Amino acid sequence: MEPLRERIQEEPAIGTWLNTNSPVVAELLASLGFDFLTVDTEHSAIGITEAQALYQAIAAGDSDCTPLVRLPETNYETVKRHLDAGAKGVIAPLINTPEQACEVVKAAKYPPEGKRGVGFARSNTYGANFDASVPYDNDETLVCVQIEHRRAIENIDEILAVDGIDAVLFGPYDLSASLNVTGQFDHPKFEEAIDTAEAACREHDIVLGTHVVQPDVDEATQRIEEGYRLLAYSLDITVLSEVFGNDLDEIRSVASDYDR
Image 1 (cartoon, rainbow, N blue to C red):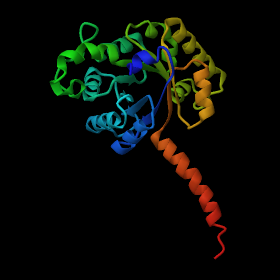
Image 2: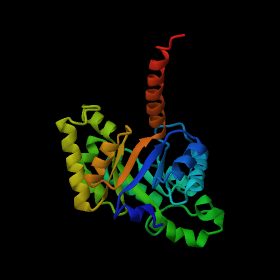
Image 3: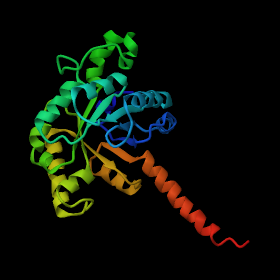
Image 4: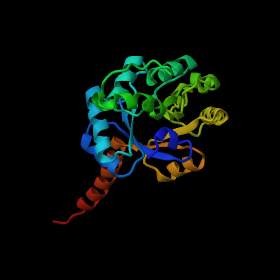
């Protein structure tokens, strides 16, 4: 299977978000056939040790499922540790300037493309595949920046001109909040910002990505039809809440009418 970084240049990839630190959930979701699973270390309590266990569980579920990480911060040390632990790509939150984007790319790539530190780790089978993995990792590692603030929209062309960026993932909630229209995704301000960013991605030949937070198949298919090729479909905690919450309400409505 070709790396996710290459696949999304030609066709959509569908994944989901992991906010629980359960290896069982990670392995199960990978086995379902998702193209990628993103371990969310920005909006969860997942630390580096738990993240590595999740990357291992994803590989156990299906070796063709690519483990990604949404970083808690974009400093060099954090990027390096997650890639060493087994993530095959990074999603960098709140990238507002080309300088920030450039630092993420440098941290994610070995020299000469970047400055990623070289050492024995899970990413190179603890040193057993060291010689082969270093050049391969540079070709395989996905770098995705999140555009989720009005400043990023203002700087979008400069950000996307940074060499080494593979994809953009829009953060709709944060972006709408920065425009003072929180959660109003049909507001003209929000729609204009998205239109501007989409046009820039197409101009710079950068893959469009989005997160369909609520489990809505119609919205997901619509995004694919619009040209999005990196699609995160909901997240583990939301699907659990929706399915169990809705079903529980329905079951309780019947149980409340039970005639003893």
